[in-house]
Length: 302
Image (cartoon, rainbow, N blue to C red; front, side, top):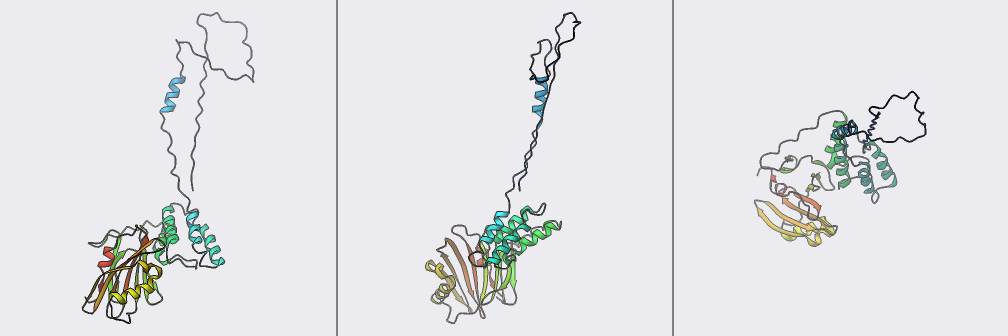
């Protein structure tokens, strides 16, 4: 939405000039023609015109600042719907486009929240054909509802000591581990176990996958075969390093540069009852913070 503010100032100055010392005339002056154009008359030097002073005063008045131009959010929402075309039916896409009218224009004073939520949904890897917000963006859509209801914005929580701003400790008691990741992560059921995801403000997608144990003993070879199944073509250039095995627990770091020009970086932790795969994905060269995500991981009872 954009606003344009304009103003016009009209300044008229009339001057009447008489000739000093001239005898008064007994004849009435001829009537001025209604169609005649106004003529500017120079004032005698003895009677300075008020026009320059008035013009200076007008120019001294501060100009009214223009309102900032705000880019519309409609195209962002439509781009989100465009991402459904290749994987969803026509009805789902049309429903998505119709739903965009809810956000354009945004509720008064909530433009920033609407923009952040729609950009998150547009880029979300867990965007579904159902006309609901991706779970990875649920917190941002809740902020729209809170803003519309007149609630003050939530104060950002201070990060625990040693973690980047905006990060938090996450504990999964059911599966027996804890780790650090950006705030706002959401968990859902995956094809083989729980899946927790969050998209950071810089666009990095962080994923925690809880998976069954490998059939083979953990080793660089068995983990490479595992990644080839999980990563598909991204595994063409996968690199593994730092394999550690002790006390019945194993871990290894992996990285890959995918054909779709994204980077996929992560850690695999193998405990006594499950395999935990940590993934950080982003466009090539734009991967966000990973060390706290990878190395604050702990199995319960460690």
